[in-house]
Length: 196
Ligand SMILES: Cc1cc2nc3c(=O)[nH]c(=O)nc-3n(C[C@H](O)[C@H](O)[C@H](O)COP(=O)(O)O)c2cc1C
Image (cartoon, rainbow, N blue to C red):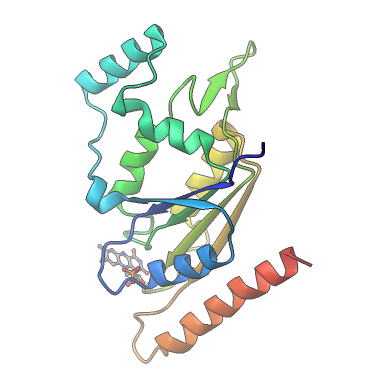
């Protein structure tokens, strides 16, 4: 029997009135499946330390997949669709996203190395949506999104990343409501086109 489509929603939004979260909810409205939300602020993952790195290596060597230390990587690898909501902070994303990446980037769970020493993906997802809003302009390099896209392509084997964004929201005189409306309309149009 076909299992339910699993959507992993990685929520790195911090502010109570988060506009990034508003856009991400709009994306989620278009997706069907069983959604699990990771509230990164509440989860409060720790960066890998000397101890956790050694423990993770030992777990992987022993084939023990029950330990909570491996949970993020296993859940990420098992998701059919991933949605990341990350406000544009310091030209990138909040540190919670980097810490989460440290947890999911795990040899043998989300990717492995082939005989040519190149990484190949072990993840189910075919698509990752990256949702962001920015107070000013998003620089052309868009380092946060570009980094996640590179990881998807080089490590996880997730072939498609889709970016939805709204920028310039905090600029003097900006009509934030209309910028947000435009971004929501773009999301709706993207899915309309996808479902045609
Ligand atoms: C800690 C912090 C860092 C930020 N860094 C940037 C930045 O580098 N560039 C920018 O354009 N806006 C920056 N902003 C503004 C946010 O990108 C903007 O307000 C965004 O819409 C916040 O998303 P939210 O409404 O989901 O919290 C920053 C805001 C905060 C709180």
